[in-house]
Length: 412
Image (tube, rainbow, N blue to C red; front, side, top):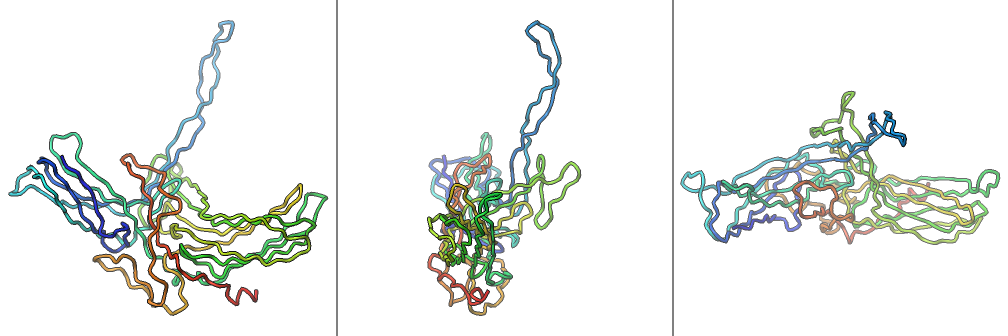
C-alpha cells in the first residue's frame, strides 16, 4: 500500500495570515495503488462546545409494599449539547491525477513529493486551544481510492500567528497602578488596615519577557503579613448555541428567543509564585519581583465566539487565627512583537506570496523570536478524526531586556 505524510516548509509549522501555507505531500508507495486522485485540502475554524445538564420531569407509576399503584412525578437529567463554529479557511487542490485523461489508474510503486500552497485569509485569528473550544488549522492529504470503503488520509495541524505589535496598541506602553485598602479582623475585633499599591512599568508584554512588578505594602494593622502570591491569569471567553450555530467572521453573535447565545469563561494560570514574607505591624515595605511570561497565546478579540485576555493578580495574606487577604489585579496585554523605544513605521499590509518565517521587526530590537510550545500543552477538545495531540507554538523572546519602572510610576 502507501504511506502518506505532510511536510511544511516552515520547520515550526507556523504561518501568518495573508501569506501562503506551503509544504509537500510525501508518499511512499510500496506496491501499485489504484486511485482516482490525490488531494490536499486546508481547513481552519473556531469551534466551541460543551454540554449542559437540564432537569426534566416525567410521570411514573410506582407500586408500594401493599401492591397499590400510584403515579408520581420524577425528575431526571439530560445532556444538552451547545456549540458554535466560525469558518476561516476551506480549500482543496488535486496534486495527482491519472495520466492520459483516464478516470482511474494505478500509482506506481516509488517515492513521490507533491508540493502545495494555500493562501491564508488576512482575517484569520491566532491558533488557540482552550477548555471549551479551539481555533485550529490543518491540512489533510487524501488518496481517493475507488471501490474501497475508506480513502487513505493523513492530517497535520499547523499554527497561525497574526502579528500583534504592541507598538501600535493604545496604552500598551503606559504604566499601570492600582491601590487596595482592607480592614483586617472580623466584626468588632478590627485589627487595623493594610494598603497595597501595585505598579507595572507598562501594560504590554511578550512571552519570554519578565514583568518588573513593584508593590508598596503599608501594614497599619496589628497582624504580621506572612504570604504574597502573584499570578498571571488567562481568561478565555466562549460563546455557543443550543444545538449548533455557524457565526460568520466579523459578525456579532446574536440569537432569537430560543437561540440566545450561551457564554462560558475559563481561567488558567499562566504563571504562579508564592513567597513567605514577614512584614511586621506598622512597617512599610517596597516589594519588587520579576514575573516571567512563558509561551502563551497573544491577547485577542477578533473572533466572534472566542476571546482571550490576561490579568496580573497579587494577594497579600496576614498571619493569625483569622487571616485577612488583600487582592489587587491589573489587566495586561500579551503581544507577539515587543515595545520599542525607537520610532516604528506603520506595518505594511500583507501581500499574497510566500510568507516569511515571521514578520520583520526593527533592526535595533532584540533578535527575532523563537517558537516555543504553549505552556498549557496540547488541546483537550478533540474532533472525531483527531488522533495525534497538537500543541500550538507561539513567539518567545527569551533574551529580551526587561523594562525598568519608568519615572512616571515613581512620581505617582
